[in-house]
Image (cartoon, rainbow, N blue to C red; front, side, top):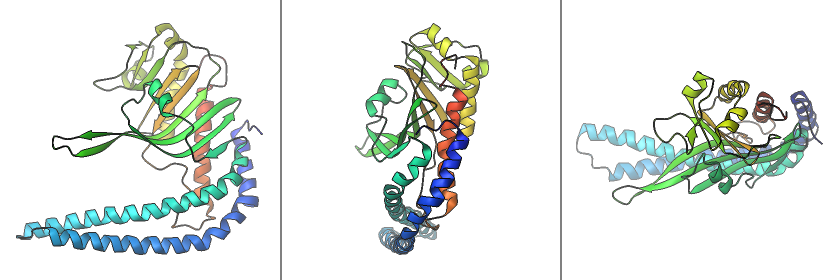
Length: 313
């Protein structure tokens, strides 16, 4: 069943949540309390062990080294404890989602939640938005459509490894956020890329000069087809594109037009589509409302870009 308005999404969500999701969630409340206690205990235990081990191995000879040891012990202990707690939180969240998502998704029309990826690494590399990564970590994934526009959504982290002069390995994040693939009714044969303007390495193709000086100052547009790029990047599109970054509270935003698809990369620091908070009752409405609003923000972006219209973006 296709849903063709955001208001319809909201009404369906309220109906399904209260009639089906909330009753199913209540059976997990005892598990949440038990797992939270276990996570807190083990986190505290790890914190104490890390502090003890590090304090024992630090060479303490002066009052300054004692202070440094205490600070470093606390920092490393907190990081280790947070990692332990986060592990239990994520495991509980995955359990909740595997049970609840099949029940919740009918509220979103024909959208489906998938644990496996919907946007693949080769597709990302072909877009030339990100090419350096050697690891792709996926979290939440959705497929569906809105106003007859096929949509694929994938929350991903792209990273790559380097080695320093001593041969030590370091992992760097190239992108963390949401990738959104939209099949649009426009026909185009070239490849056009929009991404934040930086001092070096702005784009793989020749720069496209556009009418909006503010847009050109913030974003670097490159394309294999100058004429087609100007046809795609109308004045209206450029204004909507600038609005999206603000609406998502994103660090930055990039996109690629290739093979009749618009691939949007919205860089955000927080974990999106999160459910199953150990610190809140499982049936807490607020976390599901946040989840709903995150999905709706993507639909609002489609409304903003008007990709469902076979006219100028």
